[in-house]
Image (cartoon, rainbow, N blue to C red; front, side, top):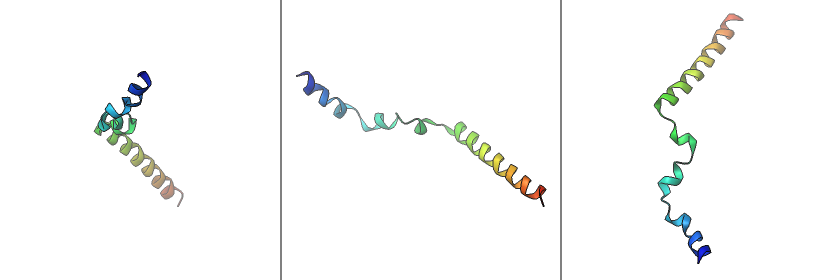
Length: 54
């Protein structure tokens, strides 16, 4: 009976709970803007270097 109840353990969990285990889905807007600012800064640095070498 124990193995039978363990096989149905995954079926009792809701799909939404399984999605929350992914760390990427737990990022908030502050994380999003932080990553965008880092990428924008790197892009600006590349453009600055390109124009400085001309």
